[in-house]
Image 1 (spheres, rainbow over the protein chains, first blue to last red):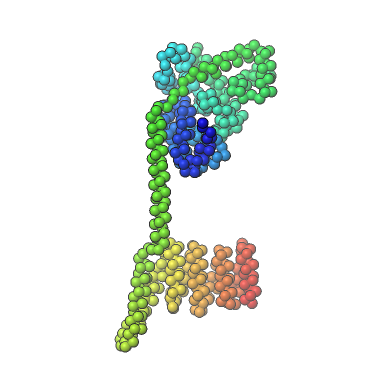
Image 2: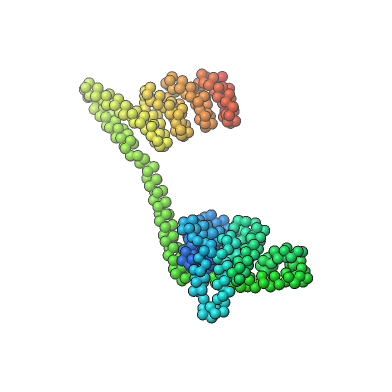
Length: 183
Length: 272
Protein backbone atom coordinates (compact mmCIF):
# COMPACT_ATOMS: atom_id res chain seq x y z
CA UNK A 1 0.00 0.00 0.00
CA UNK A 2 1.36 3.32 -0.96
CA UNK A 3 0.12 6.04 1.34
CA UNK A 4 2.89 8.57 0.89
CA UNK A 5 1.56 11.75 -0.68
CA UNK A 6 3.53 13.48 -3.41
CA UNK A 7 4.19 16.40 -1.10
CA UNK A 8 5.50 14.30 1.76
CA UNK A 9 7.83 12.52 -0.68
CA UNK A 10 9.14 15.79 -2.01
CA UNK A 11 9.66 17.13 1.51
CA UNK A 12 11.76 14.04 2.25
CA UNK A 13 13.80 14.72 -0.87
CA UNK A 14 14.21 18.30 0.29
CA UNK A 15 15.41 17.06 3.68
CA UNK A 16 18.20 15.13 1.94
CA UNK A 17 16.68 11.74 1.13
CA UNK A 18 17.41 12.19 -2.58
CA UNK A 19 16.55 8.58 -3.51
CA UNK A 20 12.89 9.27 -2.70
CA UNK A 21 12.57 11.26 -5.92
CA UNK A 22 12.49 7.86 -7.62
CA UNK A 23 8.93 7.45 -6.31
CA UNK A 24 7.88 10.69 -7.96
CA UNK A 25 9.60 9.59 -11.14
CA UNK A 26 7.57 6.37 -11.11
CA UNK A 27 4.36 8.32 -10.67
CA UNK A 28 4.95 11.15 -13.08
CA UNK A 29 7.42 10.25 -15.81
CA UNK A 30 4.64 9.12 -18.14
CA UNK A 31 2.26 12.07 -17.73
CA UNK A 32 5.15 14.52 -18.00
CA UNK A 33 6.42 12.74 -21.07
CA UNK A 34 2.92 12.81 -22.58
CA UNK A 35 2.61 16.53 -21.96
CA UNK A 36 6.03 17.29 -23.42
CA UNK A 37 5.42 14.99 -26.36
CA UNK A 38 2.16 16.71 -27.28
CA UNK A 39 3.96 20.04 -27.09
CA UNK A 40 6.91 18.99 -29.28
CA UNK A 41 6.06 15.71 -31.05
CA UNK A 42 9.64 14.64 -30.56
CA UNK A 43 10.18 11.48 -28.59
CA UNK A 44 13.83 11.78 -27.71
CA UNK A 45 13.66 15.45 -26.92
CA UNK A 46 10.68 14.79 -24.68
CA UNK A 47 12.59 12.11 -22.80
CA UNK A 48 15.51 14.46 -22.33
CA UNK A 49 13.17 17.11 -21.05
CA UNK A 50 11.55 14.72 -18.54
CA UNK A 51 15.06 14.02 -17.30
CA UNK A 52 15.71 17.74 -16.99
CA UNK A 53 12.49 18.24 -15.01
CA UNK A 54 13.64 15.73 -12.40
CA UNK A 55 17.13 17.18 -12.36
CA UNK A 56 15.71 20.63 -11.70
CA UNK A 57 13.49 19.27 -8.96
CA UNK A 58 16.61 17.95 -7.26
CA UNK A 59 18.60 21.07 -7.86
CA UNK A 60 15.90 23.43 -6.64
CA UNK A 61 14.47 21.10 -3.97
CA UNK A 62 15.12 23.71 -1.27
CA UNK A 63 12.63 26.05 -2.98
CA UNK A 64 9.78 23.58 -2.54
CA UNK A 65 7.78 24.79 0.42
CA UNK A 66 5.08 22.15 0.51
CA UNK A 67 2.37 24.80 0.36
CA UNK A 68 1.44 23.93 -3.22
CA UNK A 69 1.04 20.63 -5.05
CA UNK A 70 4.21 18.89 -6.22
CA UNK A 71 2.38 17.90 -9.39
CA UNK A 72 1.72 21.52 -10.29
CA UNK A 73 5.29 22.46 -9.47
CA UNK A 74 6.51 19.68 -11.77
CA UNK A 75 4.39 20.89 -14.65
CA UNK A 76 5.56 24.45 -14.11
CA UNK A 77 9.15 23.24 -14.27
CA UNK A 78 8.29 21.21 -17.38
CA UNK A 79 6.90 24.35 -19.01
CA UNK A 80 10.11 26.24 -18.23
CA UNK A 81 12.25 23.40 -19.56
CA UNK A 82 10.13 23.46 -22.69
CA UNK A 83 10.60 27.21 -23.10
CA UNK A 84 14.38 26.84 -22.69
CA UNK A 85 14.42 24.03 -25.21
CA UNK A 86 12.46 26.06 -27.74
CA UNK A 87 14.76 29.02 -27.22
CA UNK A 88 17.89 26.94 -27.57
CA UNK A 89 16.94 24.65 -30.42
CA UNK A 90 14.26 26.71 -32.03
CA UNK A 91 11.98 23.70 -31.83
CA UNK A 92 9.10 23.80 -34.23
CA UNK A 93 6.10 23.49 -31.95
CA UNK A 94 3.37 24.42 -34.36
CA UNK A 95 1.87 22.11 -36.92
CA UNK A 96 4.50 22.54 -39.58
CA UNK A 97 5.65 18.96 -39.47
CA UNK A 98 2.18 17.50 -39.31
CA UNK A 99 2.98 14.63 -41.64
CA UNK A 100 5.95 13.68 -39.50
CA UNK A 101 3.76 13.87 -36.43
CA UNK A 102 1.16 11.62 -37.99
CA UNK A 103 3.75 9.02 -38.85
CA UNK A 104 5.22 9.22 -35.34
CA UNK A 105 1.83 8.56 -33.87
CA UNK A 106 1.00 5.83 -36.34
CA UNK A 107 4.23 4.07 -35.44
CA UNK A 108 2.94 3.51 -31.90
CA UNK A 109 -0.22 1.66 -32.91
CA UNK A 110 -1.08 -2.02 -33.11
CA UNK A 111 -2.32 -3.40 -36.47
CA UNK A 112 -5.91 -3.67 -35.22
CA UNK A 113 -5.86 -0.13 -33.97
CA UNK A 114 -4.47 0.89 -37.30
CA UNK A 115 -7.50 -0.33 -39.13
CA UNK A 116 -10.00 0.79 -36.59
CA UNK A 117 -9.03 4.25 -35.58
CA UNK A 118 -6.41 5.19 -38.05
CA UNK A 119 -8.38 7.82 -39.88
CA UNK A 120 -9.85 9.60 -36.92
CA UNK A 121 -6.61 9.54 -34.98
CA UNK A 122 -4.50 10.88 -37.76
CA UNK A 123 -6.93 13.62 -38.64
CA UNK A 124 -7.35 14.70 -35.04
CA UNK A 125 -3.65 14.49 -34.36
CA UNK A 126 -3.04 16.72 -37.34
CA UNK A 127 -5.68 19.14 -36.14
CA UNK A 128 -4.13 19.20 -32.67
CA UNK A 129 -0.72 19.87 -34.15
CA UNK A 130 -2.11 22.85 -36.00
CA UNK A 131 -3.44 24.48 -32.84
CA UNK A 132 -1.54 27.39 -31.38
CA UNK A 133 0.79 26.48 -28.50
CA UNK A 134 -1.43 28.11 -25.88
CA UNK A 135 -4.49 26.18 -26.99
CA UNK A 136 -2.62 22.90 -27.41
CA UNK A 137 -1.14 23.34 -23.96
CA UNK A 138 -4.46 23.76 -22.14
CA UNK A 139 -6.11 20.98 -24.12
CA UNK A 140 -3.22 18.62 -23.42
CA UNK A 141 -3.33 19.39 -19.72
CA UNK A 142 -7.12 19.22 -19.57
CA UNK A 143 -7.87 16.29 -21.85
CA UNK A 144 -4.76 14.12 -21.87
CA UNK A 145 -3.42 14.87 -18.41
CA UNK A 146 -6.95 15.03 -16.98
CA UNK A 147 -6.21 18.10 -14.91
CA UNK A 148 -9.00 20.26 -13.51
CA UNK A 149 -9.32 23.92 -14.43
CA UNK A 150 -8.08 25.08 -11.05
CA UNK A 151 -5.01 22.86 -11.38
CA UNK A 152 -4.18 24.20 -14.82
CA UNK A 153 -4.70 27.71 -13.48
CA UNK A 154 -2.19 26.95 -10.75
CA UNK A 155 0.40 25.59 -13.18
CA UNK A 156 0.02 28.41 -15.67
CA UNK A 157 -0.31 31.12 -13.05
CA UNK A 158 -3.63 32.27 -14.50
CA UNK A 159 -7.15 32.59 -13.12
CA UNK A 160 -9.58 29.70 -13.32
CA UNK A 161 -11.94 31.81 -15.43
CA UNK A 162 -9.15 32.51 -17.92
CA UNK A 163 -8.42 28.79 -18.20
CA UNK A 164 -12.11 27.97 -18.61
CA UNK A 165 -12.33 30.43 -21.50
CA UNK A 166 -9.09 29.24 -23.04
CA UNK A 167 -10.13 25.57 -23.01
CA UNK A 168 -13.44 26.49 -24.59
CA UNK A 169 -11.77 28.54 -27.35
CA UNK A 170 -9.20 25.80 -27.92
CA UNK A 171 -12.01 23.31 -28.48
CA UNK A 172 -13.76 25.69 -30.89
CA UNK A 173 -10.52 26.18 -32.79
CA UNK A 174 -9.83 22.44 -32.88
CA UNK A 175 -13.29 21.78 -34.18
CA UNK A 176 -13.03 24.32 -36.95
CA UNK A 177 -9.61 23.01 -38.03
CA UNK A 178 -10.97 19.46 -37.96
CA UNK A 179 -14.02 20.35 -40.01
CA UNK A 180 -11.88 22.18 -42.57
CA UNK A 181 -9.64 19.14 -42.89
CA UNK A 182 -12.54 16.82 -43.49
CA UNK A 183 -13.81 18.92 -46.34
CA UNK B 1 -30.27 31.15 -22.03
CA UNK B 2 -29.23 31.81 -25.62
CA UNK B 3 -27.77 29.15 -27.90
CA UNK B 4 -24.33 30.83 -27.95
CA UNK B 5 -24.24 30.93 -24.15
CA UNK B 6 -25.22 27.29 -23.99
CA UNK B 7 -22.55 26.26 -26.46
CA UNK B 8 -19.92 28.09 -24.44
CA UNK B 9 -20.60 25.75 -21.56
CA UNK B 10 -20.13 22.49 -23.49
CA UNK B 11 -16.47 22.17 -22.54
CA UNK B 12 -17.31 22.73 -18.89
CA UNK B 13 -20.15 20.23 -19.16
CA UNK B 14 -17.98 17.40 -20.50
CA UNK B 15 -15.28 18.35 -18.01
CA UNK B 16 -17.79 18.12 -15.14
CA UNK B 17 -16.83 21.63 -14.16
CA UNK B 18 -20.31 23.13 -14.15
CA UNK B 19 -22.02 24.32 -11.00
CA UNK B 20 -25.32 22.46 -10.43
CA UNK B 21 -27.36 25.61 -11.15
CA UNK B 22 -25.54 26.18 -14.46
CA UNK B 23 -25.88 22.54 -15.41
CA UNK B 24 -29.59 22.70 -14.82
CA UNK B 25 -29.86 25.79 -17.01
CA UNK B 26 -27.99 24.06 -19.84
CA UNK B 27 -30.15 20.99 -19.57
CA UNK B 28 -33.31 23.05 -19.60
CA UNK B 29 -32.14 24.88 -22.73
CA UNK B 30 -31.13 21.65 -24.46
CA UNK B 31 -34.55 20.14 -23.79
CA UNK B 32 -36.18 22.84 -25.85
CA UNK B 33 -33.48 23.40 -28.51
CA UNK B 34 -32.80 20.61 -31.05
CA UNK B 35 -30.00 22.65 -32.69
CA UNK B 36 -28.00 22.86 -29.51
CA UNK B 37 -28.69 19.20 -28.76
CA UNK B 38 -27.24 18.23 -32.15
CA UNK B 39 -24.33 20.54 -31.55
CA UNK B 40 -23.65 18.88 -28.21
CA UNK B 41 -23.72 15.42 -29.79
CA UNK B 42 -21.13 16.47 -32.34
CA UNK B 43 -19.08 18.15 -29.60
CA UNK B 44 -19.14 15.01 -27.45
CA UNK B 45 -18.10 12.97 -30.45
CA UNK B 46 -15.06 15.14 -31.03
CA UNK B 47 -14.26 15.08 -27.31
CA UNK B 48 -14.52 11.29 -27.36
CA UNK B 49 -12.39 10.95 -30.48
CA UNK B 50 -9.66 12.92 -28.80
CA UNK B 51 -9.28 10.01 -26.44
CA UNK B 52 -8.14 7.95 -29.39
CA UNK B 53 -5.29 10.35 -29.97
CA UNK B 54 -2.21 8.42 -29.12
CA UNK B 55 -0.02 9.59 -26.30
CA UNK B 56 3.14 7.53 -26.57
CA UNK B 57 4.95 6.24 -23.49
CA UNK B 58 8.61 6.90 -22.83
CA UNK B 59 11.13 4.20 -23.68
CA UNK B 60 12.50 1.93 -20.96
CA UNK B 61 15.77 3.72 -21.43
CA UNK B 62 14.36 6.84 -19.71
CA UNK B 63 14.38 5.09 -16.35
CA UNK B 64 17.96 3.97 -16.82
CA UNK B 65 18.97 7.51 -17.72
CA UNK B 66 17.05 8.83 -14.72
CA UNK B 67 18.84 6.45 -12.34
CA UNK B 68 22.18 7.45 -13.79
CA UNK B 69 21.32 11.13 -13.41
CA UNK B 70 20.25 10.57 -9.80
CA UNK B 71 23.49 8.75 -8.95
CA UNK B 72 25.59 11.46 -10.58
CA UNK B 73 23.65 14.12 -8.75
CA UNK B 74 24.12 12.38 -5.40
CA UNK B 75 27.85 12.15 -6.08
CA UNK B 76 28.06 15.83 -6.93
CA UNK B 77 26.19 16.73 -3.73
CA UNK B 78 28.64 14.63 -1.73
CA UNK B 79 31.56 16.31 -3.47
CA UNK B 80 30.07 19.70 -2.82
CA UNK B 81 29.71 18.86 0.85
CA UNK B 82 33.32 17.72 0.90
CA UNK B 83 34.45 20.85 -0.86
CA UNK B 84 32.48 22.96 1.60
CA UNK B 85 34.12 21.11 4.47
CA UNK B 86 37.55 21.53 2.89
CA UNK B 87 36.98 25.22 2.38
CA UNK B 88 35.96 25.54 6.00
CA UNK B 89 39.08 23.73 7.15
CA UNK B 90 41.20 25.82 4.82
CA UNK B 91 39.73 29.03 6.18
CA UNK B 92 40.22 27.83 9.73
CA UNK B 93 43.88 27.15 8.95
CA UNK B 94 44.23 30.46 7.21
CA UNK B 95 42.99 32.20 10.34
CA UNK B 96 46.26 31.22 11.94
CA UNK B 97 48.51 32.08 9.06
CA UNK B 98 47.03 34.86 7.02
CA UNK B 99 49.48 36.02 4.39
CA UNK B 100 52.50 34.48 6.04
CA UNK B 101 55.14 36.90 4.80
CA UNK B 102 54.52 39.97 6.94
CA UNK B 103 53.66 38.23 10.21
CA UNK B 104 56.65 35.98 9.72
CA UNK B 105 58.93 38.93 9.17
CA UNK B 106 57.39 40.49 12.24
CA UNK B 107 57.95 37.36 14.32
CA UNK B 108 61.50 37.12 13.08
CA UNK B 109 62.08 40.70 14.03
CA UNK B 110 60.65 40.08 17.51
CA UNK B 111 62.82 36.99 17.98
CA UNK B 112 65.86 38.93 16.83
CA UNK B 113 65.00 41.69 19.25
CA UNK B 114 64.55 39.05 21.95
CA UNK B 115 68.01 37.68 21.29
CA UNK B 116 69.46 41.14 21.27
CA UNK B 117 67.85 42.06 24.59
CA UNK B 118 68.90 38.76 26.20
CA UNK B 119 72.40 39.40 24.99
CA UNK B 120 72.27 42.88 26.44
CA UNK B 121 70.89 41.74 29.83
CA UNK B 122 72.87 38.49 30.17
CA UNK B 123 76.19 39.95 29.11
CA UNK B 124 76.67 42.93 31.38
CA UNK B 125 80.39 43.26 30.59
CA UNK B 126 79.49 44.87 27.27
CA UNK B 127 81.83 47.28 25.73
CA UNK B 128 80.68 50.74 24.76
CA UNK B 129 80.83 49.60 21.17
CA UNK B 130 78.40 46.75 21.79
CA UNK B 131 76.00 49.07 23.65
CA UNK B 132 76.05 51.35 20.70
CA UNK B 133 75.35 48.47 18.31
CA UNK B 134 72.46 47.33 20.45
CA UNK B 135 70.86 50.74 20.42
CA UNK B 136 71.17 50.83 16.67
CA UNK B 137 69.70 47.34 16.45
CA UNK B 138 66.67 48.09 18.63
CA UNK B 139 66.11 51.33 16.76
CA UNK B 140 66.13 49.30 13.56
CA UNK B 141 63.61 46.84 15.00
CA UNK B 142 61.27 49.66 15.94
CA UNK B 143 61.68 51.14 12.51
CA UNK B 144 60.99 47.78 10.93
CA UNK B 145 57.79 47.41 12.94
CA UNK B 146 56.67 50.85 11.93
CA UNK B 147 57.37 50.30 8.26
CA UNK B 148 55.53 47.02 8.38
CA UNK B 149 52.59 48.61 10.11
CA UNK B 150 52.45 51.42 7.59
CA UNK B 151 52.56 48.98 4.69
CA UNK B 152 49.91 46.77 6.21
CA UNK B 153 47.60 49.74 6.65
CA UNK B 154 47.45 49.90 2.85
CA UNK B 155 46.37 46.26 2.60
CA UNK B 156 43.02 45.76 0.82
CA UNK B 157 41.94 43.23 3.46
CA UNK B 158 40.20 44.83 6.44
CA UNK B 159 41.45 42.14 8.82
CA UNK B 160 45.05 42.85 7.77
CA UNK B 161 44.53 46.55 8.39
CA UNK B 162 43.11 45.77 11.82
CA UNK B 163 46.15 43.67 12.54
CA UNK B 164 48.35 46.58 11.51
CA UNK B 165 46.48 48.88 13.85
CA UNK B 166 46.87 46.40 16.69
CA UNK B 167 50.65 46.33 16.13
CA UNK B 168 50.84 50.02 16.92
CA UNK B 169 49.72 49.32 20.49
CA UNK B 170 52.94 47.34 20.85
CA UNK B 171 55.09 50.26 19.79
CA UNK B 172 56.58 51.90 22.84
CA UNK B 173 57.00 55.13 21.03
CA UNK B 174 54.98 56.38 18.12
CA UNK B 175 56.52 58.84 15.74
CA UNK B 176 54.68 61.50 13.79
CA UNK B 177 54.44 59.26 10.75
CA UNK B 178 52.61 56.50 12.65
CA UNK B 179 50.26 58.94 14.36
CA UNK B 180 49.53 60.57 11.06
CA UNK B 181 48.83 57.21 9.41
CA UNK B 182 46.48 56.21 12.22
CA UNK B 183 44.61 59.51 12.12
CA UNK B 184 44.20 59.16 8.36
CA UNK B 185 42.87 55.63 8.85
CA UNK B 186 40.50 56.90 11.54
CA UNK B 187 39.01 59.40 9.12
CA UNK B 188 39.12 57.53 5.86
CA UNK B 189 39.13 53.77 6.25
CA UNK B 190 36.06 52.31 4.50
CA UNK B 191 35.60 49.61 7.16
CA UNK B 192 33.98 50.67 10.43
CA UNK B 193 35.70 47.91 12.41
CA UNK B 194 39.10 49.13 11.27
CA UNK B 195 38.12 52.66 12.25
CA UNK B 196 36.94 51.48 15.66
CA UNK B 197 40.17 49.63 16.42
CA UNK B 198 42.13 52.63 15.17
CA UNK B 199 40.21 54.78 17.63
CA UNK B 200 41.02 52.28 20.33
CA UNK B 201 44.71 52.35 19.43
CA UNK B 202 44.77 56.15 19.31
CA UNK B 203 43.04 56.49 22.68
CA UNK B 204 46.00 54.59 24.13
CA UNK B 205 48.34 57.23 22.69
CA UNK B 206 46.54 60.14 24.33
CA UNK B 207 49.80 61.22 25.90
CA UNK B 208 50.74 62.75 22.55
CA UNK B 209 49.12 66.17 22.15
CA UNK B 210 48.83 65.68 18.37
CA UNK B 211 46.78 62.54 18.97
CA UNK B 212 44.32 64.44 21.18
CA UNK B 213 44.06 67.25 18.66
CA UNK B 214 43.62 64.79 15.80
CA UNK B 215 40.84 62.98 17.67
CA UNK B 216 38.98 66.24 18.35
CA UNK B 217 39.31 67.22 14.70
CA UNK B 218 37.99 63.85 13.65
CA UNK B 219 34.73 64.16 15.64
CA UNK B 220 32.82 66.21 13.11
CA UNK B 221 33.94 64.06 10.19
CA UNK B 222 32.53 60.79 11.53
CA UNK B 223 29.35 59.67 9.81
CA UNK B 224 28.77 56.25 11.36
CA UNK B 225 26.68 56.25 14.60
CA UNK B 226 28.98 53.57 16.05
CA UNK B 227 32.02 55.77 15.50
CA UNK B 228 30.28 58.89 16.76
CA UNK B 229 29.29 57.18 19.95
CA UNK B 230 32.71 55.53 20.42
CA UNK B 231 34.59 58.78 19.90
CA UNK B 232 32.31 60.49 22.46
CA UNK B 233 33.25 57.73 24.92
CA UNK B 234 36.93 58.32 24.28
CA UNK B 235 36.53 62.06 24.85
CA UNK B 236 34.81 61.37 28.15
CA UNK B 237 37.53 58.92 29.17
CA UNK B 238 40.25 61.43 28.33
CA UNK B 239 38.24 64.23 29.98
CA UNK B 240 39.00 66.29 26.88
CA UNK B 241 37.12 69.53 27.47
CA UNK B 242 38.33 70.98 24.18
CA UNK B 243 36.14 68.49 22.35
CA UNK B 244 32.89 70.13 23.51
CA UNK B 245 32.87 72.52 20.54
CA UNK B 246 33.23 69.71 18.02
CA UNK B 247 30.62 67.60 19.80
CA UNK B 248 28.17 70.49 19.72
CA UNK B 249 28.86 70.85 16.01
CA UNK B 250 28.01 67.18 15.59
CA UNK B 251 24.69 67.80 17.37
CA UNK B 252 23.77 70.31 14.69
CA UNK B 253 23.70 67.55 12.05
CA UNK B 254 20.05 66.94 11.21
CA UNK B 255 20.32 63.24 10.38
CA UNK B 256 22.17 62.37 13.59
CA UNK B 257 21.04 59.10 15.15
CA UNK B 258 18.67 59.63 18.07
CA UNK B 259 20.64 57.43 20.47
CA UNK B 260 23.92 59.09 19.51
CA UNK B 261 22.40 62.53 20.07
CA UNK B 262 21.41 61.56 23.61
CA UNK B 263 24.83 60.11 24.29
CA UNK B 264 26.64 63.22 23.02
CA UNK B 265 24.42 65.44 25.14
CA UNK B 266 25.34 63.36 28.17
CA UNK B 267 29.03 63.50 27.26
CA UNK B 268 28.93 67.28 26.89
CA UNK B 269 27.17 67.61 30.25
CA UNK B 270 29.77 65.44 31.97
CA UNK B 271 32.66 67.29 30.34
CA UNK B 272 31.49 70.82 31.22
